[in-house]
Length: 176
Length: 160
Image (tube, rainbow over all chains, first blue to last red; front, side, top):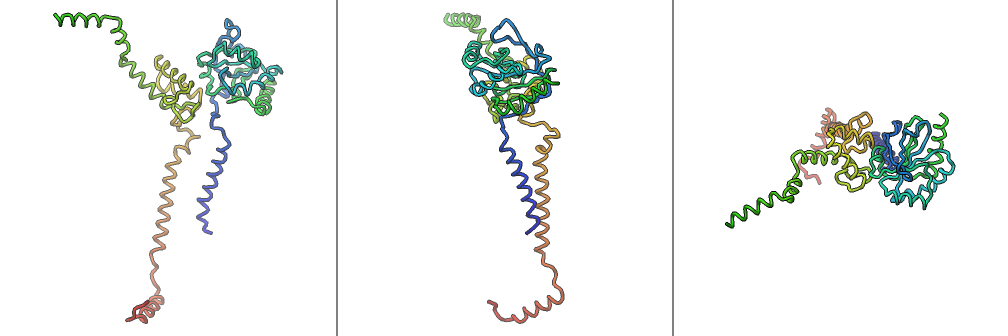
């Protein structure tokens, strides 16, 4: 066989390998540039006590999760039972960012499906969401003791992501 | 008389609040420049919800919010580069429809050019090989003699 024919064949095989890997990647998951960066500051009113505010500065010194949710978000219902379980276990504080939602609807939603959040804060017009690079609710961030974002889950938390990524990371960060 | 009445009427209309409203609706030059800048910027940025649309094209809520951000930042006097940097800081290079030239995107930028160069090299080699093959090698004396003998034996007859 002509050896020269092997060159296009080789290129073709490499191309196929790239395309095959691409098949298993989710194009919706855009890596966040914020990982390893300080959590963007905010001071937002709390959902249940609008007179009080909360921001990342208040959570310095502990590992915490920021979960972006809304009552209009369908996939949030998918991950919610896992969050409720996690909230009950009290392994890590969870802050809810009630994103572009009506407070009344948000509160009703939590009453109906359970409230796993230590505190939920209200991002009525989505500005804090933009600062955090949120583009698809739900999203979940892991923030370490120094206030650095360590991980971002895009889309609903799955049992697998929780067990294999989020919880091990949280435990490791809590030790340090 | 009629003309005077008309003028009076015009004066009344011109001084009425309606007229000021109409004047407000006409964009000033500054506004139209800002609007054009906003449109230009939002055409450069990708909407992350519907990934093959720009922020200008998309009607997703996020795209609307980001358009609002662009307008506000233009109004606040930020430059185009600053606004683009703001978006990249939050959403990564993926928001840019035109990816930046960096080591990680070198292949992306240089790829088409390299392909053309390789294509021309391959083409040149193939053409040269073909020319070498098509150019018949000169006959040796022995071959020439044999050819003449064969042709000579054929002389005068029509070969089938």
